[in-house]
Image (tube, rainbow, N blue to C red; front, side, top):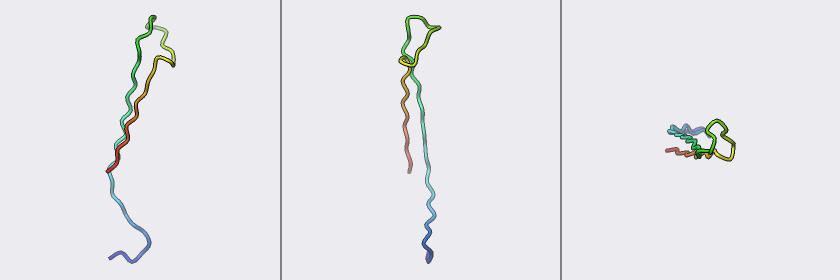
Length: 44
């Protein structure tokens, strides 16, 4: 039995980041508007 006010929790966290680039007309000139990021977070 836990008589204190603290609780110990074990959990698993997953953070996945994906970066997508829309191909610009000039491949050497990629702008910020051509980038899209998708971030997925999961914890159990």
